[in-house]
Length: 210
Image (tube, rainbow, N blue to C red; front, side):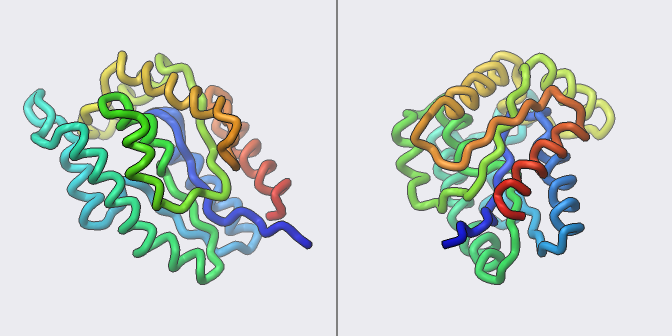
């Protein structure tokens, strides 16, 4: 019996690790091989996700009014709405779905300020990805990338964009990679060149049957 190819692919990592860039590049590589690809992200562009992203922004040096528990619940609610509205319909139609951030991001980010077990509990109804690429990168390199991007684009500062927080997040992602009971996790050396990272992910997907 043939094992079905993984069709729900997630790209995870701290800000500046390259998840967005690689999602686009891998999507194009899959399209060139004849696959129908849907690119998406979380927080999603939907109504809950848009509000969540707004509340992540720092306003006048102060974080907006929603606390860490409320934010964790908003991420979880956006995830389920996004699954029902975008991800599941695309998968049912035979598409490959690539998502920039997903459940593991909530585990890592929201567990900074909320009970770790509770964060996992509120996300238990979210479908587990077929393949999760976890971008491992020294947080100092990531911070430099984010600063350069912000200077170029004027990107808004978010509440997690603090050096010490980014270091804790990088450690959180590495801890998830060490969990032996999680299926489909793949560590990605995000310090490699853009082309090398793309090649590594595409080669892994080819080995999975693409």
